[in-house]
Length: 90
Image 1 (tube, one colour):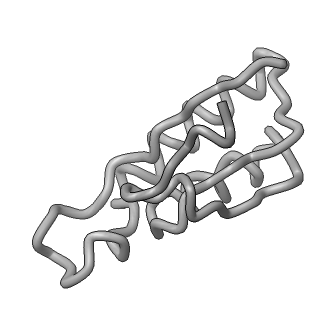
Image 2 (cartoon, one colour):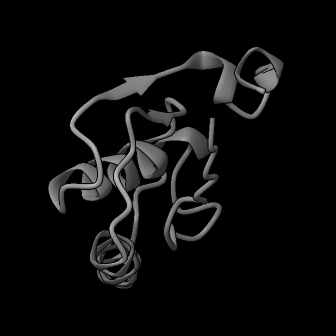
């Protein structure tokens, strides 16, 4: 099994939202994430599962990966949230 870890794109500044989990990607974050996703797709990568945390910016990043064809299945997992335990996925 191969595991690729992809961090979310550039998000809105801390403090601009009451809840950190609600911070979305910025316009530049969307653009750069899309560019990286397209490059990964050109290199022939395809993921069986795109796993995302419940954070808005992470879900937006996962959607971009899905939109360029890197994978069709996206699943949200609380274990990937900042206070979560990712060990079940390792």
